[in-house]
Image (cartoon, rainbow, N blue to C red; front, side, top):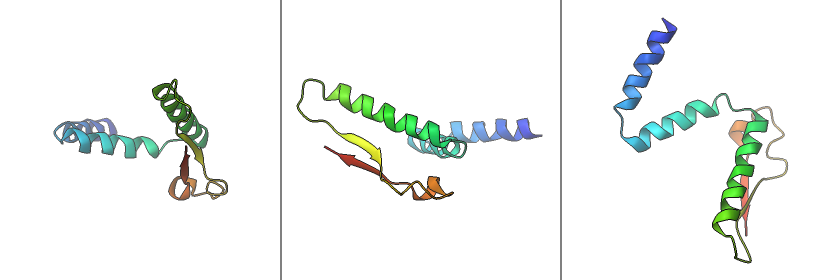
Length: 84
């Protein structure tokens, strides 16, 4: 039954506009995201911005705002700040 429900969900998602389907997938993945994986994604984002800005004096830097991730509900309250 669980697999059948999952198959039906995938079928419905595949019929949605691409942007909506991508958003749904991101929301679903964030449900099982660990804090370590989250920090890894922030680090990946910093790697991408550094590569895009290669050769430039400044580039964007993303980091978790201190104290915003200390709650058990970090997925809801965490803040990522961007500096140049």
